[in-house]
Length: 239
Image (cartoon, rainbow, N blue to C red):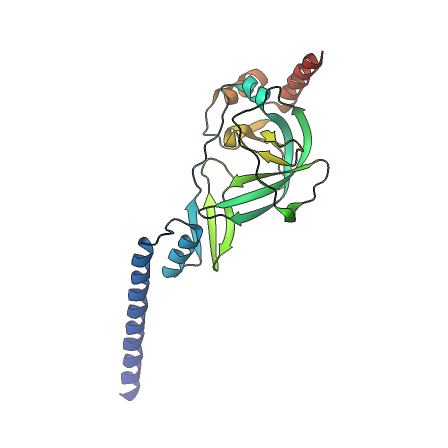
């Protein structure tokens, strides 16, 4: 009988403690809804902890991209390069995460012939990712994964997938004068995965755009055919 009473007592005490913790967490969650920093990275970490979780996933902040009207306009305003990521590092911002990639520039297919006066200036490169080799450059993408106050925060852009190390890409990119830092001004509309067969696949196949259509119709999504055309254009421009 004594053992039964002890067990019952433990169960009751456990229920009381669980109820107290639950009430405290609910109070904390209600408090966080009124917090001045609501929506910040640290706020998401606090919400996760109040829910008893060690991970949280958020949607990346809205980014507006400068998408050209057609392929020729893209070639006129941006560098077109074949590159592959070598490494990446994610950094927490006030309300999101930014991931910096170090790319190896395998080949530059064309350089812009027009200056983009409306393009923003490039951000300062993370010192820990420098120096670079002659064929390397850095570029940042919104989103990524980082640890904040012991909570793993993941930020994802549903349209602009993260780059994979070792995967070759065709990228429309704008550079700073030293070609150290690049900008993905076209966002996912300017990034194509290069398959082992040398064909081009949009990083997001759901995105429809005249540039995407032209690559398919004029070049059959074939990298070699596109490269030959761009080299031909570059030769004519020099003459």
